Image 1 (tube, rainbow, N blue to C red):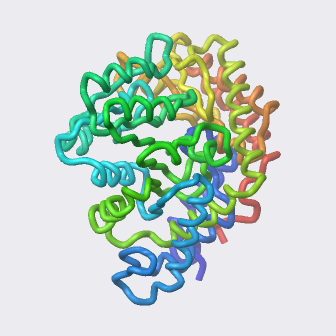
Image 2 (image 1 turned 30 degrees about the horizontal axis):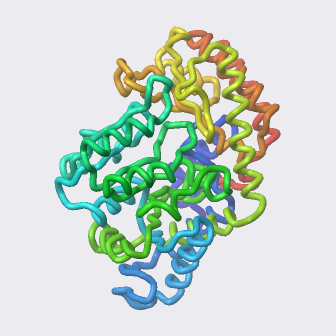
Length: 415
């Protein structure tokens, strides 16, 4: 019995979501399209198996094939990033970060982490999170030019004597000098952590600096630019291996999601192929086209541009808020997310900016010419944010474009 025959309501919702992805332009920088092989592994019989513990040391029987899969995911991740130790069990990026803190820190320890509005992540010490109640997070910011000020970071490290210095961001668009951060940490006797959730795929392809062989611990998601299933991963020096594994299980999680780990293994194999390097290079090239044209159209680019896959844009000079821009673009078939900008005076649900990126568009095969057209549509949609007829006209053009870049041919939930 097919899904549609058994649960028509869910099948219809999935079919509508599939059509939304096919007919629209997915530009949220944390989203991507996995391959059919990754989808197949994700929906495999591995979902049926409980496997608490680690390969060769499970608390359940019948794990011999699951061990093969998880060990393969670990080996491939080590190969990609040059890691000494890898844990592929974290359920997502936030749990991976929490496990990393648990492995390295004691309650009350001081951590230097980036302020959320300047490109950081909630789990980097925002006051609303549980971690901020356990550890003493000191939040640093970008400078007046919108760039990470490493000299200021050094001064803060000398002043606060942190146990851990954390870099790696969710909305910062420039390269990171991990080697210099490690020098600062060495000067004050701190450990180092990088959250590369957004840029892991670019690092895997050699398109951005790699902190894995330098830092004490590195966390990442496995989706976004790495183009795998939604999940997390921790890489660390061997000296932290036991603490990391214990923090993940049994510290914070029970049985791992082995179907997701199987999909991670497939995605890691894809990331090791020469084609992935071409893909990552195109992600950056596409982002630079958007940067150039949107700047020409009068948009205010945070951090003065991009070195990676994303752009953070202040849209208030265009007379709209981030929320209004997101809604208008959604009506036009272009999906972005509203986002705070550095020291934003507006509220998180109605901020001054939008965040957009190129990973998913690049996966579909779009290149510079398409980016030029898309940048124009973004500009027109925001200018005409209150004109539903104009937004519907753009949406029609978007649908025409996406037909040239098919997504999951043959896949259907309505059969």
